[in-house]
Length: 232
Image 1: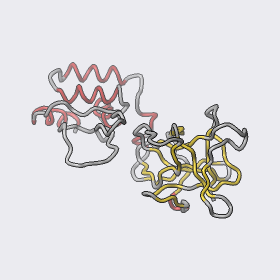
Image 2: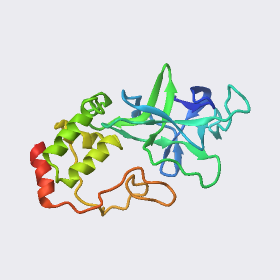
Image 3: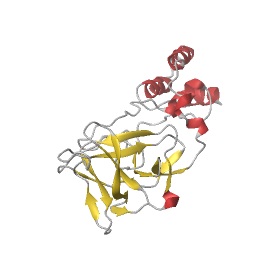
Image 4: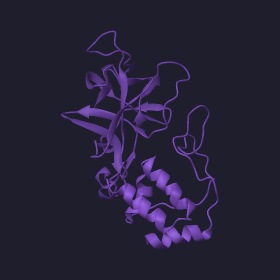
């Protein structure tokens, strides 16, 4: 059994001694199976979800909203979630409810977490090589220098300028690989998308601000080929 992790008003992460962890799949709260949980991967970030209360399972199998800190009555409890590194895919969302109607949250990939024994576990599976995506290989001191060097080499390539923005402002690992000249690197090729993903991080949805901006132009074939050939 995994137990609920929550945060107190000081931002400290705590384990609830009695409340079993729940995750969310679609519109349902579910008890996580062991095959859906792994020890928190190296390179993950534990974060709070603002404006929400955690939900867990009591001993009588009734869902319970944890709206106050058991260790400090009268103080609010908050939701703890994980942001996974590349190479891992979440299996469950955090089980939580908003403190007030209409509360929005940042468009981040929140993953359900729980506590068992002496370890934090995340609802995730490994889906790619983690080594290539470990944060230690990104946002290095040499990144800015590498970006400036490539921009001087390809001064008229608008895609490269977009990738520089993605690397420095958004911290995108796939964009940074273009400048590190290794592994998988993305080449954005269109300002539009034929999918209709609710919660897309590069398209505005209602009042939720888009954390990333798409291309504002249609690249030429030469711009795409220039970067692809250089990277390969």
